[in-house]
Length: 341
Image: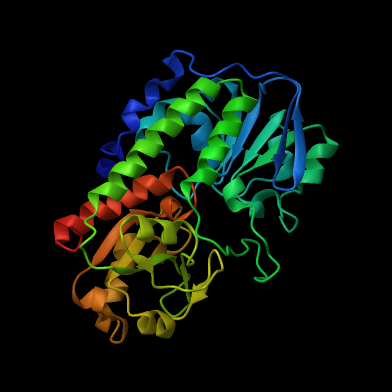
């Protein structure tokens, strides 16, 4: 099995660790700074001094911006921190790898909370609502990539009518860097991601087959429906970036699909997530692959019969800074299999 840590280490992040020392390329933030964020207006009178990264993507963006000394806590980590960020992350208190309580966050006396998912502070969150933080004077910022409508899909993740792209991630990096008055670091980070995105897209042959993909995040059990990446989410973006398409057509961000549905989707490639949380046995990629190869019906899917099974960091299936790393992981494995030119 491909060593994910080695792949992550090879994906160029080491060049980003020095961003904190990058000479200023962008102007300083003028306070008060007011931003429109997911339907709310948020004003900052000064740069935060005691931030919490609530959700892996938010925490890792803050770390990539060199803000570990401005962080008092992190929580909700589906995967371990990027290896190159481990040293910086070790300086920040880990509240929990799962969902924290509102009280545990307030105990750190934060002045800002950067939030990765609406399930963590959205209207149906079991942790807290944005209003709860407002009432105690703590500003919040929700990832623009996850501000989705729940009108058509009655779950907390919502649905996406158009294909996600990196512009929303770039907006998030830019705005967080403005909030902390490190816009130069934000622009350097964005430039790096743009270069990697362009390189990956140009490296895929236009004459190659338009491969269909299923991105399997996890399942509570082999008999349960699978949580898969929806048509227009980060998974769909990765498929498109590699010259293919998502075989799952649901606009829901995280649809649950029975194996009959996945069999009928007839994917050329199945991407299985590697997760470190160990909530379910099928969080493990080796458990997923064992099931795919041993189930009498599922093992007949073309992707399984042709051994077109690749492993990707599960967090990359969320619209995050990990997504481009995930695309690089998938591309490297498919090229080794001769399925991607």
